[in-house]
Image (cartoon, rainbow, N blue to C red; front, side, top):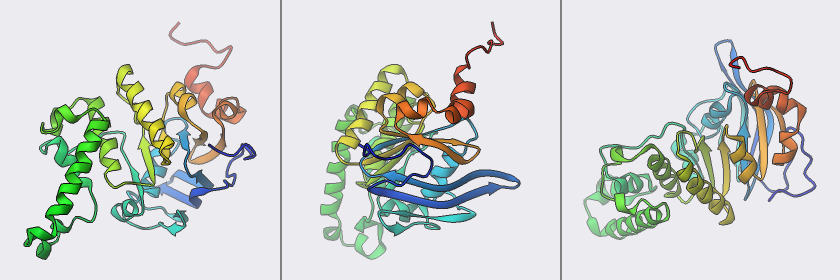
Length: 277
């Protein structure tokens, strides 16, 4: 949980920051998608990233996780500089992310989707692959880890089915489980509840809070404010690529800058008639 004495203001320093970003900027032609002066994500917390469509939330995720390149800026993760590093190297440092649109390998089994995500597999290198004793034990350990995660996310009954046969919600669970195969320090979830039925939403919420309770850091993008207010320890609001507010959920929800940039337009401001009525 964030310390009580952290000021609810953009760019505020955290006592145990895991991710620290400075001057991160990403433009597309004449459009500035991300312009974050300073942002810190505290270790061991659930941080929600909110904002209107086009605010730069997913672009910021892409840049920090190595799936896109920033035009300017620097950031560190657990003290290690990550700016300019490829996504697979970022993951090896312990920061992994999921996507709003799930990216399963539909022609592979569910368990193989998980096994493929494990890092530093000896059998992937040419010479060791020719000597099974060098990689068989590790392969058994990877499979055991995959089965453990399938049980945790209630996908064990689909273990040997093609991943392409999973429902949208099950794919969300699979992608979260796949992210955990690398035993990350921080998980970044891009709209994990999008397109998920209410029953499965509760399951996903339980998994996210469990990760935090186990000491993992979680940062997620979400539009459902009930979800944000229900599980977040800290909320960061972006508008036009900039951090306009951050703080505990109740404080951010009442911030005039947030209401003006996001909540007012999304949820209807008092005194403004709905065009559909």
